[in-house]
Image (tube, rainbow, N blue to C red):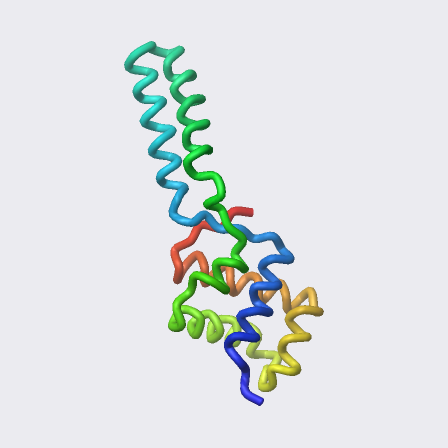
Length: 140
C-alpha cells in the first residue's frame, strides 16, 4: 500500500504535539512594534523613567494583542497548510527517513509513533520545513 499523505500528516502532527512544539503565527513582529512604539513614546514624554514605563506598558499591550497567536505546530500542519505544502512536507519527512525504506504506511506510522530516534528525525525534519519553507518561527 502506498503512503497516504493524510495519515502521514497525522503521524507527523502527533510527533510535533508530543514534543510540544509551538510556532509564532505572524504576531511576533506586531508585538515587537507595539512594545517599541510604547517605549519610544514613554521615553519622549518622560525621559529615562518613561522608557521603563513605556516598555512595561508596551509589553502588556503586546501580550494582550498577540495572546493566543502561538499555536501548536501539529495544529498548524493539519489545518493551515495547502495541499502543495502538505505534499512538500511529506516528501521532506520521507527523505529524512529514507534509510528506513518506508514503502508501506502500515509499517511507517508505528515506526514514527513508537521509535524515539525516528521521532527525533521526523521532528527535526518538520521543524526544518516549518522554518525554511513556511517561514515560521519555532517557539520551544
